[in-house]
Image 1 (cartoon, rainbow, N blue to C red):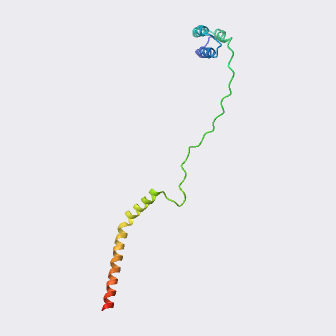
Image 2 (cartoon, helix red, strand yellow; image 1 turned 135 degrees about the vertical axis):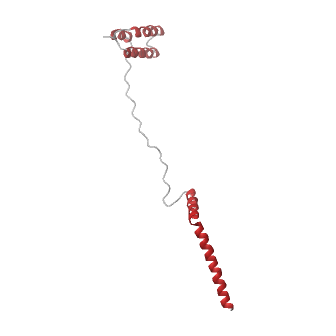
Image 3 (cartoon, rainbow, N blue to C red; image 1 turned 180 degrees about the horizontal axis):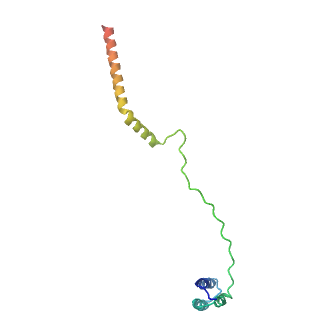
Length: 124
């Protein structure tokens, strides 16, 4: 049976880790790393890492809880933001403003007219 490229790559990954741990010298690392790509069988690859103990298996880290995205707090019930009050008044005056002006003019004119008529009747 022939060794696959993945088998060779695994050995090439194990060798530098063993060097960093102090299990191989730089010369041994170069020699073994040079032989790994030329190896044809898994047995040849196994010989290169036979004296290197397998690293202990680490338990995967515990999954971290997922936090929900922070939502802005809702506005207090019965209260409007300051900008909303101004917008409501602007809309009210835009829609009803002409009517209110005419009503006030008519009411003022009626009051003045009634007052003048009452004054004339009392005087006269």
